[in-house]
Length: 314
Length: 257
Image (cartoon, rainbow over all chains, first blue to last red; front, top):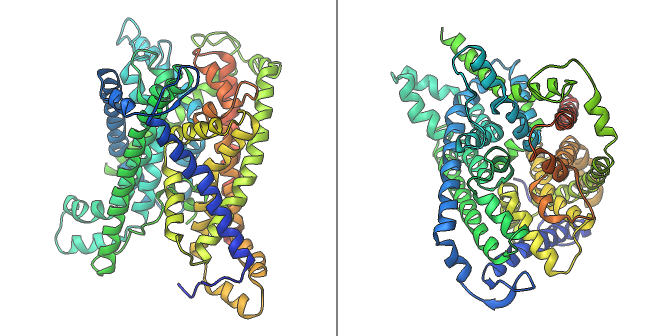
């Protein structure tokens, strides 16, 4: 990087930097601190919270009610993430290895659902897995079943819904990661006698690890928080984390408990962001040592994921 | 053999993505009330949407919020990207990390933390609060989009402009901004769709006096399959499709130059 203007002088510079700081401070840091504060306050009779410090909200999280919610949520989120990864990796791999002429179009077809409202996509799923849905009618027409299968309002439906709505969030960072992989490395490995499975295990997988972590983060975190997928497909049977938090704020009016529950999400975010940073530093480190061609740019995974017009045309 | 297996797998995943949307689209033209039977082609559900004034009000509110939030977020995000890219200053890495965290942080946490702050400041939930919330949601996405674009071009261009006597502001205006333009436009379009689609943050940051479309749709969707919701979903999908294609076109044209 060439010299960056360091010293003052430019009003433009001061303006850009101070506006950004103000925005980050007032709309990201301040609300987060407020949320943290509320999580250690007492619940008020009339007000949403009263200024009395307590750890009671966190203690309440250790009770059977919340632990049940947490267990169900994490389990569903884990399996959705796992299936997204297993289904998404080969899919992303084939897009990245498709002919350059086809690649932007194949990618565009993933970007469209990525941008489409997942509420609409969740709704659309009812027409497929509902009692009168395509799946049931097809199976009945084929004579494989006599009565419609009950898919809706089960854990399985929520799992299908999460996988369906979040799969593009897995595919796009994976694609970005795989596409950057230097194929010469794989050729070299094969020349040296490595089988394709071995080359995949020792080269492709470690070098695309940042993409894998980024994809898992972009699937796992939202699947804990989006309350509408379980509410639409799972019914009211068992409550998941997103709905629990929402209800504390909008129904039960127990803001301190809701704030404390959201700490689980924040903790998961910090852990996964740290993991992402580690994995991309590791890949970047190998690159520096000149051992391998590279993929670890240590950049934002959403740079690829969020910003599709750019990624698609590279 | 391997090749056709590969193709079949790809086709299967694409079918998984699009089949549900396709079915919604087809049934939105079904004149029957139920999805069980095809009652013939009709646009009656689209007509019933147009006469639903509460829905139209919510749509208008959403459009207003989306246009304002996308514009504010584009301004903020571009400013941020330019500052992070161009200058060294204390806390530059912290700023970059903060933006990164905002793009990956769960929406529900952003929604409730803003709610807590708005209420603590005794602000009434409505247009202003949802506008501020959506701007905060979208600006980091604009920033990363623009940053990605700025990474691609030669740093020396702006130095050359400075050496030739351009002021800092002039160098931005005539060198950086035109180069970043496709990303800025794509950032605006992305922000607009994010704002139009957001259920999670809107749920917490607007009040009953200012209903927005996604929250309204959610309350309709919760009641199950309805033909008018099919029509509404189809419209929303086409709308997104249009914006994605537009964003693609914008970046493609400029890249070829």
